Length: 235
Length: 315
Image 1: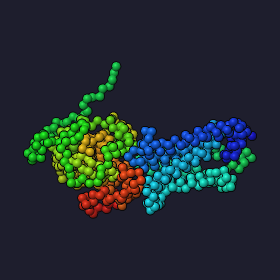
Image 2: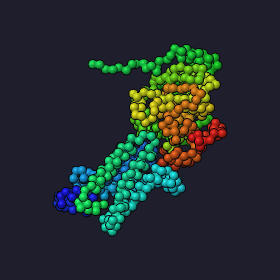
Image 3: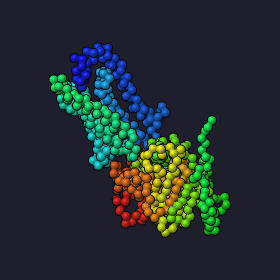
Image 4: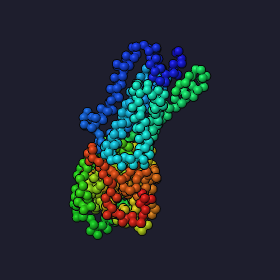
């Protein structure tokens, strides 16, 4: 059972098996009661910084254009968490730290959370909830079209992120949650297209994304070359 | 210990003999034409602090200006950093005194000029103008400057002078971000001679009655209030009168998105975003964007400059 698990831990169920088999209850408790709350608290730091900026406390300030500052802040953190979520599986495969998969949903949901804040700032502070310009933006401005598509994908993933939805949806669930790849690509694309001139930063994110997706592709190709008996119907 | 010492006088600070002599001629000529104000009323440009003898102007808007803090902390000056707050942070790198600039091209009077000497015959004016950035934000800024028409006249451009080209200083010690190749430095801009001599166009040397802070393009920058902000080139060291339309930095970087004219026009969108509305900086957290006005609200004064020109093609 030892070797094949490495290739079969693509879903959380088998991860769970791997944890209980390989490391016992201690790891699970440590993850659930110590590490998870700690990661949750850390993931809220960007939100706390934004709040401090809004109220001008703790040395934080949003500057002369607070709407723009919040838009950029939440947007970049949304993208960072989405890429971090996409990094979980490659990190697990490269390091063998199987338990980190337990953080994937939380990280992904924080990505969706910051993207939702980014989108809300756009709707309320940037556009003042004026419907016509918002629709015009979505239809006419390609970078906003792309960003909006990512928002819809993340919405679908968030609504189906519970264990119950996962059980009920079965195979469909996995299809919806492949949306993480699309959201990552659309997110970097959205960032790239709205930059005026200096593409250094979006380029850095694009390289990280390419590496994360490239590793998956390489693994997939490698797995395909394994005799079929050894690779049973993995999604 | 060996320490490399910078030479105390930069080549750009040395006034050529011919320029020096031609300047003497101008001063004499101006004195004859009674253009130089009476002794003690000459425009002076201190290193910092308040500017004296600033006249008010009919051309100022009565809109409430943005705060000094806003005007000096939210800047696009890529040579001092790409972020909006970078120019203020890196402002100390720029040394705006002593400052000289070179005038060349199709004009009778050309050469190297020291700024502090040069401004003496001119009158400083307060000009409270709307300022609209191509990024769809805007401010109201109380500039202090000299009408560019007066400066242009001074150099006596000849009949071949159809355009005026401007250049920012290129100095990676003063403007450290010029080490990155975000744009093809030095920053260049240009106007038609009609635009350059329009009464609204000024060479700004101050803001809020004070000497221009470095992050705003010290010691002298262009202000063309009916055009997007990137036309209003900062920290100028070169003025050239040309027959051909000069190359301009953003147009060189992306001709599809930034044209030579760059007139504020709510009907012609940037290829990636709308120019129909703008965010007024300082209007408040929940303040809606406001409608952008044709020629930034200066249509009555400047629309004539473009009669017969297709503004959609010549954006």
